[in-house]
Length: 120
Image (cartoon, rainbow, N blue to C red):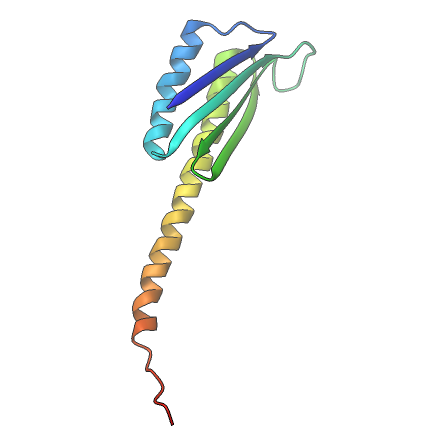
């Protein structure tokens, strides 16, 4: 998986980058088609309610795009919240895909057993 990490107004340390890559490995196990994730860390110059740092991420998985953002007191807290939101989106998409596949399998045998009308 390709990981791009940018910092705007904040220098991204090697420690934060290593932590992010370790946690993104878990996300790639949840969705194997996740091939690129871009993360942007921004230092908020004005005090916001959520904190002074903001993390945004977007990732591509086939035709699906996942996006998440979060604010926190420091870079690690913002990244943690953002990754939790991204993980929730990926697991929900997986659950919906599985439910749809199971429903299609249940429907298929009933349709194949339907009587074929005889021509008159």
